[in-house]
Image (cartoon, rainbow, N blue to C red; front, top):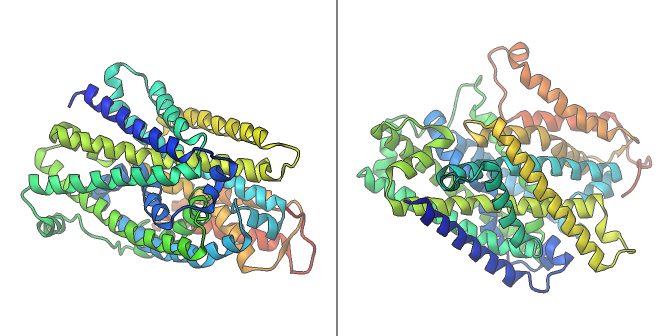
Length: 488
């Protein structure tokens, strides 16, 4: 298919997003931007969060991982189901009881202002790195498929994508994103199903036949039983649960949408419905990966990893499938980037600037500050996206999960300490503990062979990081009854 036709499709899709943004952002204010006036419908939030949770990285990387790791990624998903239950029945009641706009206010109320700012700071770091890695992957693919054919350099492609995102998020925030995420999730899942159906037809298989062929080819194994492997099933299940709690329940972007639902019961319903749908969708992505791997072997296609899906579709499938793939790809791109910029803006304004408590600022000034922060994050995303060109990885999903192990670990340890203990922190210890835990994890990770021999630590690095943070906080705290270091 010609690049001109693909470009027209991208522009038409973006125009639809703008129309939705205009409709939802009329009479929007700061409350609309931050928490959607607490009036979002739970079903819309649940469906839209699928796109945010999966993103373009899942769309590209999970199918590409099957050739090397079969269905072992599903071990993480099984662990995530337990993690989502913890979010629904432990964390959400806490957030609703405290009527939070930013979930890190809990840390301030429980452990002091240093905990509040440290939690917000680690979220900002985590979400910035993760979102720009996801953004880089999809911009790179759009660049290779469409934009490079018009002589457009990579930096300009990244800039145009970010300008598109800014145009429909600058005013409406969460109120807009709840609706645009629903549209984008529909596009992504529709493309996934159509690609699966077409490949089955092209290979002369039905669903059962495709599954049997994958089993015969050794592509359908789920559980890794080698205890020394970084992908051992027990490690992946535990890591999956921790990832769900940390990257969903302790993440302002994900919880910002959840707490925009009016009633706690509906927010809990949203979380568990999302978990059920996610399980089916991840399994479908892995099934697609098996089909792509078998098709590539039949056709002698050398691409693997993140480049497998685009190579098969754009070089060997009909033009109409290519068109659907591009629509699904850009549908997968925007939820991870638009929600991240909005959540980072919210966390910075609420947690670091204290925008909601500024009685000396009128609504117009607060809106100006919020817009400046929003534009600042867009500029930062552009710089980091360009920087990720030097960190390109064969499987970006693995890189993102590894980064999460370092950056979400202190958040998990902080919240666990606040919820599970009644101890109070000594003054000045928290920032050092929060920095020391990931630094120690880096040392351990870099010298695994020295410390563990043949044993390999994988995604459980997140749990180790959280445990180190928890232990440091315990050592740097006093029993209940002592005064806190400071109060938010």
